[in-house]
Image (cartoon, rainbow, N blue to C red; front, side, top):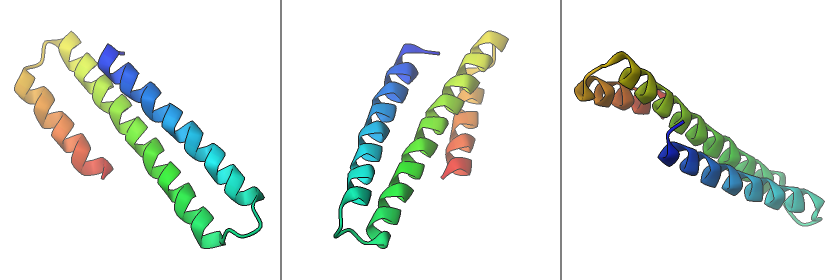
Length: 86
């Protein structure tokens, strides 16, 4: 894994970890609505999807570099990934 991707994945995972702790506190609270909790768990799902996107892009870039693909091909594939995962 490239250093930039590794750092971004770790940063995002730490953010998710904090978010999960926050949701756990919401569940323990008496005055939080189901809708509020669901909104926050959906945010966690989105954050995990972004982690997966970073990982997928890094994997594609790494494999293309190993195979000697052009930089243009790498850009096209990462653009396609962005379109699919959003």
